[in-house]
Every structure is written in C-alpha cells, then in structure tokens.
Image 1 (cartoon, rainbow, N blue to C red):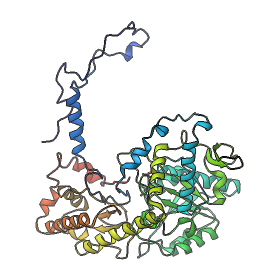
Image 2 (image 1 turned 180 degrees about the vertical axis):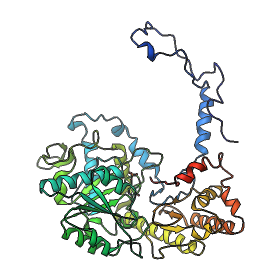
Image 3 (image 1 turned 90 degrees about the horizontal axis):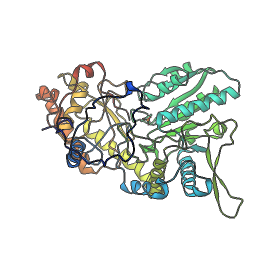
Image 4 (image 1 turned 45 degrees about the horizontal axis):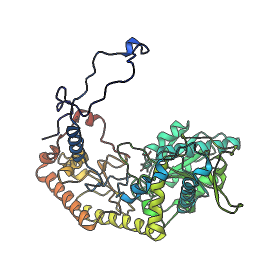
Length: 481
Ligand SMILES: *Cc1c(COP(=O)(O)O)cnc(C)c1O
C-alpha cells in the first residue's frame, strides 16, 4: 500500500498545535487586497500523523544508508556520521559570516587546512573553497582561464571536450561563452590523439578532461595530451568531480593539469543527491593563482601566534563567485574525512574502489556486453545490447534492479555507449554486498532472455511502478549528480 498524499490523510479541524490568541491588533490594511485570499487549502493533521507520513515516505526511498547505490559518476559512498556530528558543533553552526576575524580563527583555520590538503592531494599551488558544486567549480575555472588570456591579450574562443565528457563540461564551456569543440574517443576509450591535434590551434583556450574518464578508463596518453595542449599555449582543465581512484596515488597537477575542481560531495563523503548543497573547490597552478575568487584564506606567521585572515586584496581576481565563503559546513565534513583517513587511508580508498569495480566488471562481462574490455578504475560501463535483442533496454534492467533491493546504476551515460549501464560500487561496499549485486544482475540477464516481459514490467515491489513512460521514451533516464 503506497503512503497516501498528505491531503488524503487530512481531516477537517485536526491540528498539529494551537496558536495562542493574538495579543497585538490585527491589521490587514497594509496588505494589498489582491494579495489577500479568503481561504487556503492546507492539510489538517496532528503532529503524529505528520511524523508518520514523512517517516513512511522516507522509507519508500532508496538511500545510501539503506541500499547499495552503484550510481556511476555520482560516487554514492557511505557518509560517516561522525562528520555530521563535527559539522554540528555549535562553534561551527552558530557562526555568522560577518563576525570579525578575531572571533572566527577556528573556522578560518579549518578552511586554510582544507585548502592546503586539497592542493597537496591534487598537485596544485592554491585552492579556492568557494564554488558550491562541481559545475560551479568548472565555471570558476573557465572564468579564471578567460581572465588569464585577457591579460595576455589573446583571443581564444574555443574549448575542447572529449565525446565521453560529463555533460556539465560542454554546458559550462558554452555558458562561459566558448565555442565547444568535441573530440572523439579512440578504440581504447581515451582521447583520439590525431583528432585532438586537428582540433588544437591558437584559438583554443582549454581542453577539459576527466582522467579516468566517464568510461572509468585511465587515459595513458595523458602526458602527450598535456604536451600537445601546452605547445599551443592552451590550458589543461581537470574535471576532478570524482577523484576516488587516484587519491593518494596520482595527482592531476603531475599529469600537467593547470586547473582542477573536486567535488567534496562525491569523493570526500558529503551526503548528496536530491540537489542538496555541494562543494566544488577549485585548485590552480601558479599561472592562474592571481585570478582566484576572493576572499582567500591566508595565514600570517610573523606574529607570535598564527593569525588567519580573509584576503580581499587580489586585484586580478575574477571576484566573488558565491555569497560568503562556500558551503562552510560541507568544508568541515570534507576536512574531517581527509584527516580521519590520513595519507594511508586515502590511498587505500583509491585501491579498494578500483578493486571493487574490477571485481564486478570481471563477473558481469560474461552476461553483459563490455564495450571497453580493459582494467577499469573506480567504475565501468556495460551495454545492454545483448538484452536489447530480446526487447529489454538498459532502463528496464535499472527498474528491475529495484525489485532486488538495489538502486540502479547510471543509465544512458556516457552517450558514446549504446544502452549504457554505468556502475560504480565505491570502496565502502563489502564483498558480500557485491556478490548479492552480481547475483541480481545475472538473474536479470537470465530473465531478459527467458521472460523479457517480466523485466519490461518492473518494478513490482515499489509503491509506484512506471511513472511516465511516454516522457521516458522521449527523454532518457539521465541521472547525473
Ligand atoms: C558529478 C560530476 C560533475 C558535476 O558536479 P555537480 O556537483 O553535480 O555540479 C562534473 N563532472 C563529473 C565527471 C561528475 O561526475
């Protein structure tokens, strides 16, 4: 039985609580008449009704705390609860953004430490914590690139993205006013070097790249790519939304990247999904440092005690790109994660996320088509091509997985794989859970052959089955977070 709508549970005159009588005169004269209404349809329930309603609704959902959630590219890993506890400390939550520096030394130190650790992890020279999400970090990065070329008096109006790139890359480049040039992938899933050479010119401001890319594959030509881009005076942008597989092992800065954003709400375990607040810090090499957004947290060491301050005095800065200083409590969570893991833990995360993904891939490739059969990084992309011969699409498999108690993988992305199923287990899952997942996927492969209509009618176990298939047929079930 699905939970009814809150309006269906409403009962006239039932109340959650009572207001006491007004002890001030009622004056509606100051409200314009057309803003007044006679009645307002609101549900009427007791507090207990409301609590049960929303608790039940929350239980009808899938979450990382209740289900395995292999949503490729989105890195739905476990979010340790201690981070929330730390971010809930009154010393952090009771701060006001306009408090004077001498009262917020702890908050500034938190930000300063995180800036430095992220710079070290990514191999960059400086970091801004301001951007509120991955795409916002990309936009910040491109604005800095623009400012850099403007100062050099170079008119560069193109940004290159590979055809496997995350959708935000071309979208950000277009929003920043660039002409987007796409380069194809080669047979190994990396950037086609010949095509890249053809596209590169003095018009190109930047190449935006994810490595490992959205196929979960590491581009072994990265040093050559870096050389080619820099030879033409271009900037190399690293989309580090998902840093999981290289944490503590390799650094974008060492590959030759000049600017990088990271998603704290993926790699660094900040709860996300549902569009909630994120954090997309951006790091730069020395050449782009003058253009970082203001303010930057700095430390003065000449006095007896360390002193942290917000530096607004950066004449070449692109300015402020978000109110205040980023999503501060997320920065606390990110720092808590890095410090609790330490250098050893971060490296272990990378190794286990790669091991888990390869474990799943090796089992599942016997049942599903694997277009790029190589060692993968933190994720891999299957194709439901074989199942499609029986009329079963990737979206059907995704919906059938719900019946087995799994959140579906990302589907129909990246766009270069037909009927794509993009699976990212993350390092936080146990072998037992991975085995349950492969068992379900194998079962669905079998059902697709023997009883395709069963899969095509799924899900059967959820309160609501297929919501709007007409819409879904027009618009693939894209899920990027
Ligand atoms: C998630 C993701 C982004 C976008 O991040 P948002 O925080 O959702 O804006 C960009 N690139 C890649 C590779 C991603 O996985």
